[in-house]
Length: 271
Image (cartoon, rainbow, N blue to C red; front, side, top):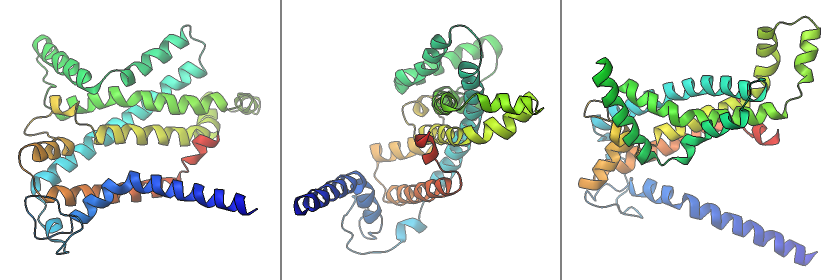
C-alpha cells in the first residue's frame, strides 16, 4: 500500500510539473506585464508592480483586436454551418466517394499556412483582374481564408459525433410522424451540438491566433492583432504587448470555462 501511495504521489507530481512547464510562458508574460519601470525589455519577476501598461494600451491594438475577433467569429460561424452540412452528407448521405470527400476536407490541415496564404493572395489578385472585385487586404478576404482553414475542424468534430449516433433514433422519430427538419432540430442537432461547438471553437482559435496566413492578406487598414504583435516584437518591443497578451489569455480561460459550463465540450470525448 505504501508503494502504491508513493507511485500515486509521484504521478501527481509529474502531472503538476508538466502543467507548470506548459503554463510557465503565460505566467512569465503576465508577471512581466505588471512591471511599471522597464520599457525596453520584459522583467520577471516584476520589480515595481502596477497596472501602468494596461492603461496605456495603444488604440491600434484595440482596433486590431476588434478586426481579429470579427473575422474569426464570422469565419467560425460559417465554418460551423458548412462543416455540419458536409459532415451530414459524408456520414448520413448516400453519395459515392465519401473517403475522397474526407480527404478533400482534411487537405487544408496538411498544407502549411504560409503556402495557403501565398495561394490565397495570388488567387485574390487573379480574381480581381477577371472580375474587378478586390478581396486581397480586405475583411471579406480574411474571412474567406479563415473559413477555408476552419471548416475541416467542424467536419471532423461533427462527423465524429454523427458516427457514434444510433441511426434508429431518426427512424423512431420518423415512425412517430416527425418530418426530416423536425427530426434534425429535435433529435440530431441537440446530440451533435457539443461536436459543433468544439469545431466552431477550434476554427475560431485557429483564425484568431493565425500569423502566417494573415500576414499575406492583411493591410494597414485591416490588420489582425497577431500580425500587429508580430510586427511590434520584430521591430520595436513595447511593454503594452505583454498587457494585451495577458488580457487575451485571461479572456480565453474565462470563455472556455463558460463554454464548458453551459455546453459541455467533454461530451465530445465521451461519445
